[in-house]
Image 1 (cartoon, rainbow, N blue to C red):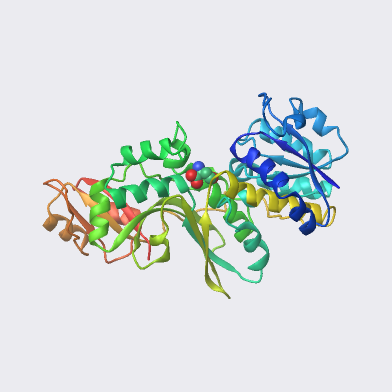
Image 2 (image 1 turned 135 degrees about the horizontal axis):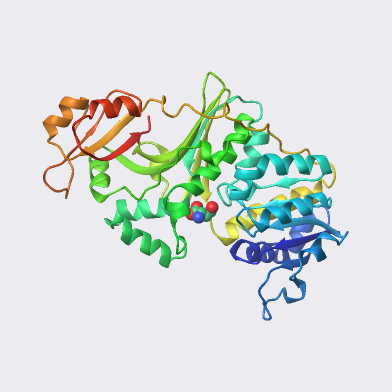
Length: 403
Ligand code: HSE
């Protein structure tokens, strides 16, 4: 029998308890043995919970119990979660997590520590919620040189953009709706400012390209600046606005990684990814493009990925090969400033002025005010070149086009 302790009985932690106990016999069959939930660590009391006998408040109970083989860290953040993860690994226990903030900031250190101790540190649920992406990327696609990974990595912002596009809601109204539905936090900045997507692209880039990419190295822009005027102009140009995380392997070995809104062609499968769904495209030199799609957030989808990792550890106790990459550094990431795109620009200018500055096409906006126009460049150029051409004009919105 394998014993599990869950740290943090929030949305994901309680989902893990439900799935582990609700599917006990089929999990036991597939994992070659019983997996028992022994402890749940939380500072709060849950007297009515069906798991009430499992609760403890002191981490040392778990740390010092030799029967605990696997610790599920669903506390989140990089504070106490980092301390408990290090201590669990030091104590020779495998750790499974959904905590993208911790993996993006400390994944290099924690995977090495796990290897040193002969245990696992697995984090399938940290990217794409319930979508299998970490294991396919590290195992099924391992024969490829990965050229690029990009996708819709945040469900909350995708929901907000979908409501702006489909229902004509303003950003503020769509955000309020996302908060009512429990997708967005009361402080929505991690989602709407792109930080959540940034952490996820860092994790994907590390696995795909073999070096740790730190969130500080990834220029990150969210969706607060997207207006209904932009949505309208994009639509009349046959495009949809999507927040994408991208990581591209450059010829000099660096990884060009960034998060930003993009105009995506309606014919691109990413344009059809709506609401809280996520989708990730991986481009490999042998396989070409492969896309992963599904529920990127939520209690049970995320728990499904966490429990699958628990089962993987349980089946391979002491044998599973560690997921490893090299330390990052200044030379690991860069090149965003030199990365060329076609651009969408909305500016307080006449159509003639914009056309003269940029060339390209002028989509007709619906419901936009006077005194502005929008343009899609035909030519791919760096942001610096775009800014040079726009000198003297007042841009209201500048968005990359995904080609
Ligand atoms: N807040 C995240 C999202 C949850 O909206 O995608 C999953 O990481």
